[in-house]
Every structure is written in structure tokens, then in C-alpha cells.
Length: 110
Image (cartoon, rainbow, N blue to C red; front, side, top):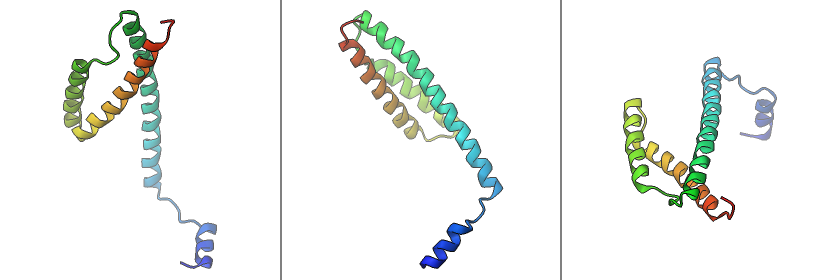
């Protein structure tokens, strides 16, 4: 593609099909919902971290984490989602939660 062709495309970009716009709008809404749900989840896990610190419990609970992985992998299968993806997604979230719990535990005024 030469410069003139690139400029012509930039001046008159191809129209995005309506169906694609609809899918993208749906994806945008789902992404927003995910962010709100994650924020709510982290508000709850912050309270858990504070409680664990007060009760002198460890930040991580491998047994609970294993139960959650199994539960969410089963849910993923029944929802048509790759269970390995669900496991990786949960692991990412749990690792962040543990990091927060460790920080709370190290804070002198718990």
C-alpha cells in the first residue's frame, strides 16, 4: 500500500458493520460488569484479609483455593468455557488477593 492509498483509507475509513458494532457494545458492557464485580470481590477479600490478620491466620489458604479452583472449573465446563482458562484466571485473582492479605498482615495497626 502506498502513501496515497493509506491517506485515502484514512480519509474514508471503511464502515464498521452494524452487527460488529453490536457485538462490540455487548463486549464493552460485559467488560464493565466484570470490572464492577472484581471491585466488589476485592472489597470483600480486603475484609477477609483484615479478619485473617486480626485472628493471626495465614494470608493463603491452599485448601480453600483448591476447592475454589475445582468449583470454578466445573462451572466453566457447564458454561462452555475452557476450564484451564478459568483456573488461570482464578489463580491470577487469588495471587493478587494473597499479596493484599500479606500487606495487611505486615501493617502494624491491623
